[in-house]
Structure formats: structure tokens, C-alpha cells
Length: 257
Image 1 (cartoon, rainbow, N blue to C red):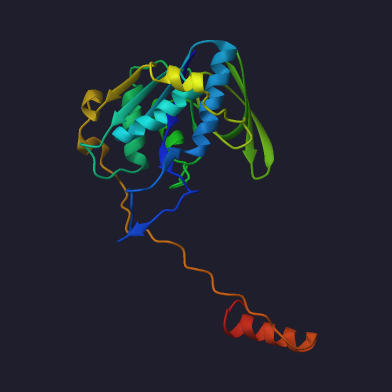
Image 2 (cartoon, rainbow, N blue to C red):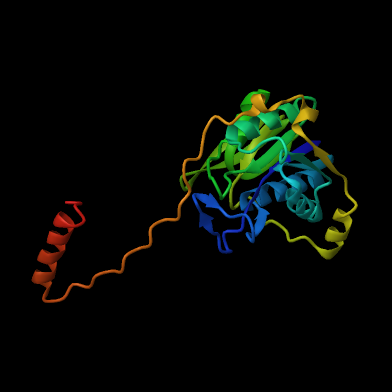
């Protein structure tokens, strides 16, 4: 079984993120595997162990993205591919990513492709469905259970707090949601083995693409931190007075009445 995982490097939101001149400052920032992609890596390993085959993790990024790929290899993935766009692209968007991945998968025989439901930095949830559409294969998003029997795939999908049961066939692309599994931590033996596992590096030229083919369709105008919350206000007096003052504030200041 040929299993692929789409991986993204994201900021560690547990660490401080600085914004300067409408841009996130990369220097000093901590980067991790997108947390939803960890569910995809874990599920890929579980399916490989159950059905055989190999797991390949794929990311688009720069040289520093090798760290996240090595982490996935330490978790148990078999191979990794870095599509390095550092020298070829200044900016990209979900269209760019999907177009590059479409070219990558053109000569691959993928049975199962897994991705995170969303990336915590942009949270668009577009890349997985875009890739599936371009490859002409079915896809199911926000899955919380995946069972494969031969060519038949049974899926439980999270739908606003409820569960939808979907049946499909291989090949298929799925995006993974919290609750699908519990991602493992890389063990020391896994970390040592990861250093010897194959990590292939490609550029967009290797995929017969040029910059015009993957030019972004959107543009980021500005990035800014949310406004700080103002301190709350405590109303004093008896109940009747507080109710009247509250109604007045909601009507005249908050303008929600």
C-alpha cells in the first residue's frame, strides 16, 4: 500500500510570535509539525502496520523544513520528500501548494493520501481537497475513524459535533481531525533510525514547473495581532438600577440593541 502524508511546517503557537510591519518575524520563532498533520502521520503508520506498504511524508518549504520531516521519520514514516521552493518562490498560497503537489503525484501510484484538517497558521483547509480534485480521486475531510478492507474504505466524519459515516474506495485522500488517534512521540531509537532513512530533496524544476505555473492567486495585505480586550466594567447599585444602566450601555455604547 502506497501511503503519503502531506506535511506542513507551522509556528509553535505555544511560543511567542512577533509581528513587525505586517509580517510575522521568522527569526527566533519556533516551528513544529502542524498539529493536525501529526494525526495524519500517526494514522498513516497505523494503516501501514495493518495493511503493509510504506509511508512517505511530503512537504513544501525550505531547508529548515527537514527538521519536521525528520520528526515524522522518527515517529515511524519510511521516507520523506522535501520540495524546496526557497530559491524559486517568494510567496505562495493554497493554489501554489496544490499545483506543486499535483505535479509531484503525477507519476505516483498513491493508494491513500492523508493530510491535516487545517493548518493552524492559515486554517483554510483547502490544500487537501484541491489536491484530490486535481488528481481526480475522492476525498473526505475531518475524519475521526478510518477502516480499510481491501479496496473499500469506511470513514467516520466529524460534522458539527455529530458523526457522518461515509463509504468510499481506494485511492482516496482524507484530512484528519482531532480524535482520530493519539500521535506518538518519537522514541530515541526512532530518532536514531530517522537519521538513516531516505530524505529526497526536489525543486519545482524537477517537477517540470516554472514560477508562472504556480504563481499565487491571492495576496496577503496585512497581518496583525488582535486588539487587546478592554477591562470589564462592574455595575453598582440595586438590581433595578443595574438593569437600567446595562440596557443603556448596550444601546448607546455597545450599540447591540
